[in-house]
Length: 207
Image (cartoon, rainbow, N blue to C red; front, side):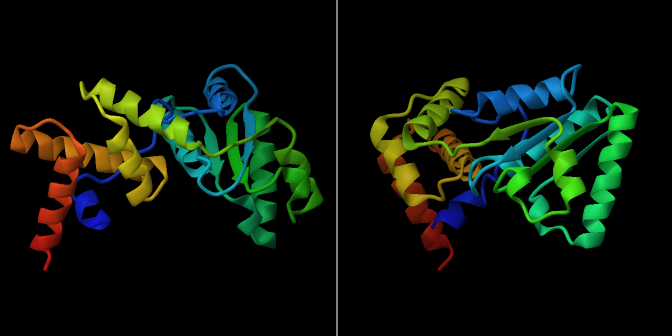
């Protein structure tokens, strides 16, 4: 049933503006400053679901829009020997040209199984840990997104979204946006019964 609803509203493209920071405000600030006059190298580390990929994709798009020479490399630990050499050379070029680099991993550079020279380059700027949003922070993010669209959500509906859908914020926002569309079609307020009705109808349509 989850996929059927999300087909109506794919997750919005990641931007720095639609990132829900929670305890990760310092990471968002560092990336914004890297696009301006701050430290140009930012390394973000943390577990899956903490927002690394969102932030790197958003950073890449923002850098392109600003016409800033930049690179974003997600999950650097997956790189092979030749790719590590290429990334080391890229780091040197970006430093020399005052370009920007955002990279990520599940641990800080010093704890990754990379070439020593690459670990040193990746750690040469700002290194920040990302922490996944807890349920209260996710609920606050959903409420904020809904409020921006003129929607009031009750706690029961939010609990249902967090319990029955993938817990990453992209999926949560996509589900909420799909429900908003359905509520407009039906000219009814967004409620938990409406969400269950939408899921039931979409599930039946696929049978």
